Length: 204
Image 1 (cartoon, rainbow, N blue to C red):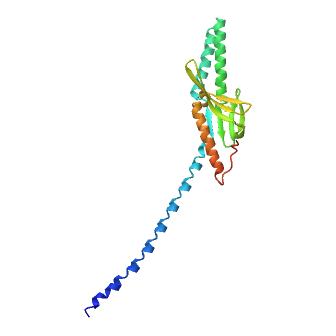
Image 2: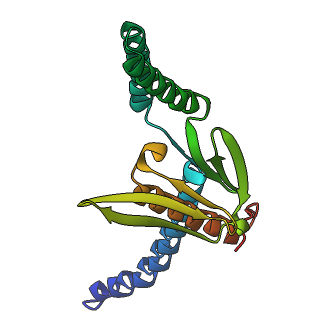
Image 3: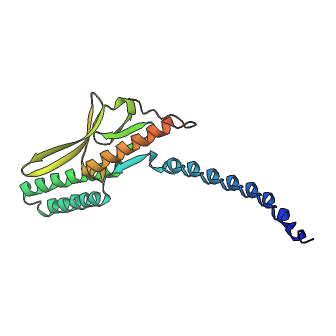
């Protein structure tokens, strides 16, 4: 009879029942981390990055306004000095020249644009030319020093044709425009490698 109190020991051996640890091993369920690894879905960043799949560079509107104002001022001076042929002719020609450049800015404000299919450039006065990516051999920034000053031009080499753009044409520095175009081509190549995406004709 004194040994009866020892019987609860096996009952305490309900440890195996406590071995419902495997049930607590629903950790794998908590391993829904992969679900939280919807990071790839969040990798819709490229899709959100679809905004910059097209870029455009345009002239600064403030400078266009200055050209218009300059043209009007020179024409008024030409009228005011009509009794002095030399001054009147000089002012008139300056007014017409400034007016012509202002008209070009108004007709073709976007000098350079690029998208998945290629690049559009303004050539000549207001003519637009479309270039496929495989027609473009090189894009670089040409830097020159003259009289103690440095000038930069964005060069788009299309083989037989070389298109030049100044910071005025682009609204940004040529270096910044070149980096933007390089970033665009990189995104286009990434989109080309991504399955299920239309292949952009980035060419060579």
